[in-house]
Length: 193
Image (tube, rainbow, N blue to C red; front, side, top):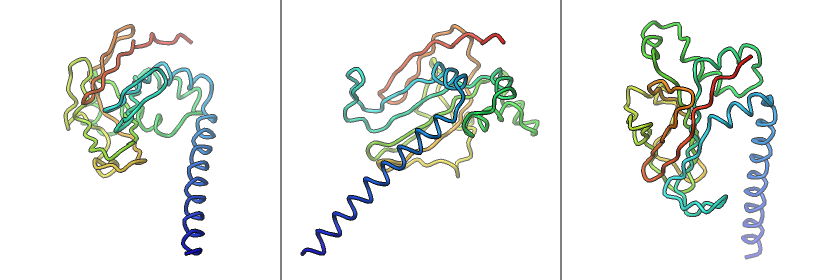
């Protein structure tokens, strides 16, 4: 009986230690982003809480969290001057300049949205449930190969997925819907250098 208690205490300690280590590493990785990239990403990102009840900063009973980040073609000049940003941004911007002709043609008059998702409960994640200003994402809009993302998620599972959407205009108000969640954001004006 005493061995079982010690085992559970050790398991609890290891779980808490792992969670603390993950949170610390996430903050450290974010801290490596330059100040300019922090500003750029924060003004281009909005969060949708799937099946969640939002009360100010408090979210209850959410099945999942979906952070949607708009990355337009013009950000490649910022990347050329300041590459102090996460690899996911570099990968997403790379879709605009593929060496494959069909991929470049596919991105004509399109923008990239990065969907960063995290399951809070069991969640079947389907990116085709996302609509952007009434445009429903189709399987053809998904830029990330299907071997690099999961659909059946367990609590704590995370991932990143890139999709293409019709190009957005600076100053435009965008409505995002995913299942029961909805959010709006205003497309930021282009930065002058």
